[in-house]
Every structure is written in C-alpha cells, then in structure tokens.
Image (cartoon, rainbow, N blue to C red; front, side):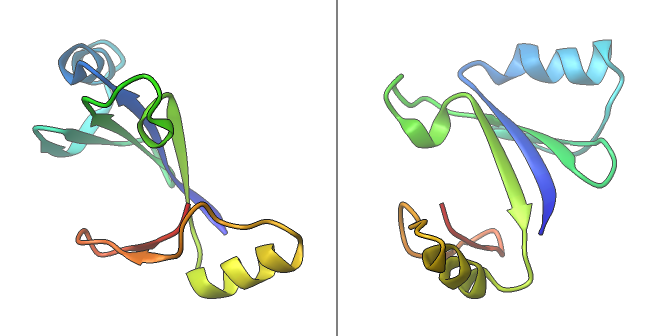
Length: 100
C-alpha cells in the first residue's frame, strides 16, 4: 500500500490553486474546474472543490488516498482485523476501484 494523493477539499478552489501554483511554485499536471493536481513527487497533491455542507464527512477537511493492488483483498484483510468500510468497493468513472 502506498500513499497516492493528499486531497484538501475546498469551498473556494481559486485561492488554494493560486497559493500552491503561484506562491509555492508547484507545477500543475491536471486542471479542471473542480480539481487541480500538482506534481509533488510520488504522492500527488490534488485540490478538490466541493459545495457540500459542513456535515458532509466525505468532502471536508483532508483526504488521504492509498493505492493497493487488490481493493477486495484489502477489504477482506481489514475485516479480519475488525475494520469495516463505510461502503462496498465501487468502480469509479475516473478509472479507479475505491473503498472508503
């Protein structure tokens, strides 16, 4: 398992994008209206805009995303240790199988 992305969620993406791109000097490798990804080495920094309310646990604060070879095997291994995911693994439209 390796850390792939650190994702700060932002209600206003523009100032965060400007800070990391212009002030810090990170190079953007992907930019979309609700997402900007920076080259920060093996683990990328990706800013994600959201309009969710303060009680939306999935899109507030900071997200750490790890990459594994087999998501289902990870879920089984964690279940053996008494840890259950919030939801079953999902095939995402951006090409990843994810679990939270």
